[in-house]
Image (cartoon, rainbow, N blue to C red; front, side, top):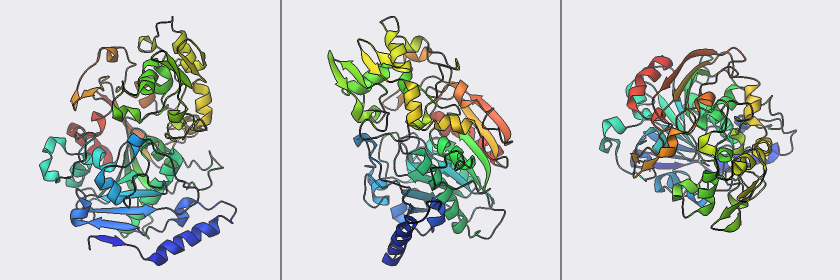
Length: 457
């Protein structure tokens, strides 16, 4: 059999541990309950582009079922199958992907790849140029220059692993804990459970950097009510942050047109609809429309984007990235100001970014107050190409992109390159590079492999 299922006894035992944990003081962290025994293992034809794919579940009750936007469900047939034929998997689950030769490579430090929002390990690290499509072919069918980092890093001699989170827009705390779980499992796979010097290197893209940073910061002390978080265990050598939001983002509150396009629905492409709306009400086609269903505020609707309000930072208030021409509105900017700071105009009603930051537990501010562990070496890869619009998979520069803040089209440079606070505890900054790539190309262009290889060594 290509698919191996764990014994029923293991499932019962995991549930029993979870049951007992509910009667404890709540201080047990998720990774202490994580055994590393996969629910399913896929190899051969069933693992497609990978040598091996494992489905895991952490039984800690801190993991919950999150709601999905229809466009955010795991409807890709391959992913759905790997997630137990479930398009809305429980957020206690994650996939661990093992690249070809993961158990035969000569380099000692494994690499764990962490994808960003609305993404997965296949699209991010195997076929990154095949966007929003279900590719079920062989790696050999992908032109070499379009193959992802998992392929190239494996060829360079690294044992390569990757995670796929259950929810593409999921809670960053839970995803942080699953990084800890993945590292535990990689240690087991490499048969180095008793190796005190065991470490991995992390490469995270976009939103994946928040989960990585939470783990590396020992964030349990920052968020004491999150009892399931594992304190950093000294098991990461190098952390490569690709297109990171070091100071968070403010996109939903910065652009009125962004909110209008999402609310109008027919105007936006289906893939765009899997994004949160910042305002509470907005005028669409002459009628007021409530936006609570797709709200960035967790309590307003179905909480379809649980990780997004956690990413927010008030970049305009501190004059880090002032509101500019790209945010202007035709009513002498009254709507621009109301959207960002809170208020009501003839076009929308908004609570403002500060309320949303509070709803996200001020995650970015607390991370900025501490920094990552001093044993970790940090490398940052940021972009300054503002063109991020694609028409039929072809990059198509748009007029308004000339006025967006300097950055990679999504993350402004003032956020992606700000490393003062992440180094608060004394972590070593190896290098920070700004290159003319957009948010997507930073995690897929093969010319960047030489830089990454040097950092990993």
